[in-house]
Length: 124
Image (tube, rainbow, N blue to C red; front, top):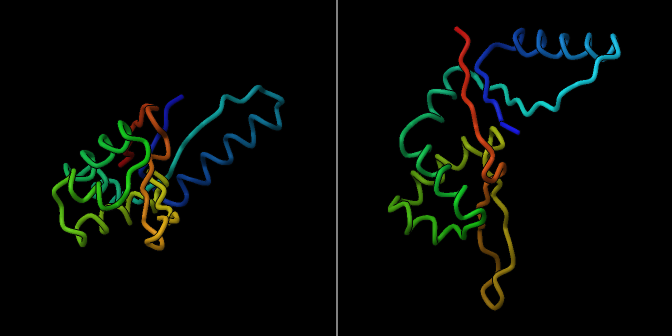
C-alpha cells in the first residue's frame, strides 16, 4: 500500500470525497486509500532536502529518541523542531513523550508509515 500526499484546495478534497461516496452508493468495492491532502505551499516545504532526508532516516530506524535524532541529522534543535512540526502536521511522523527511567520524560519520534512508499502528487 502506498501513501499519497496530494496538493490541492479544499474543493479538490471534497471532490475526492464525493467520488468515494458515489462509489459506496453504487455498491462498488473500494480499494483502501491512504491520501493526505496538503496545502500547495506545505507540499513544497515537505520536499526540502533536509525533511526528505529526515523521513528517509526515520523509515530505516522506525522509532528514535529526539537526542539521537539531533546527533544523527547534525541539526540544531530549532531547525529539527520546525521540520518535525510540519511532518507531524501531515501525519508523516508521530512525536511521543515516553518515560525515561530516572530522568523524567523524553521525546521519541517514529515514522508513521514505516517502509511504505510515499508518493507526492501536485495538481496545479
